[in-house]
Image 1 (cartoon, rainbow, N blue to C red):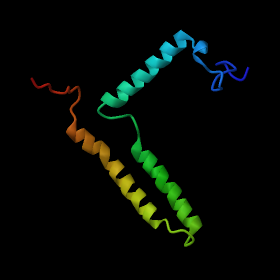
Image 2: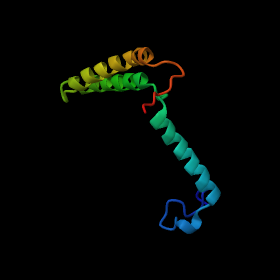
Image 3: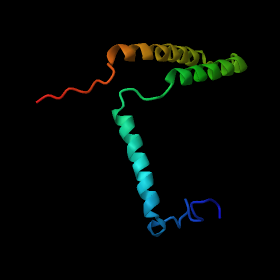
Length: 107
């Protein structure tokens, strides 16, 4: 067997007759929970500043290797601006949200 999910997994033979209802229910619950959190959490648990910093580091390495062959200075500057904005984001979010606050409802 190729994997624990069955020889047919991700093949033309992966049809409705192969569905395990328990796995389908479990997987659906996981997806629904994830989508719910993505749509309702006021702040997602992502470290965008770290990703921006990684991107900037890679672009700087590329710029050094490429020299004048390919001009990516604009990309480096854009990544620097992105990193700066992402580093400011936690303070901005903290100043606009209150712990345990709930959305107001209007009638």
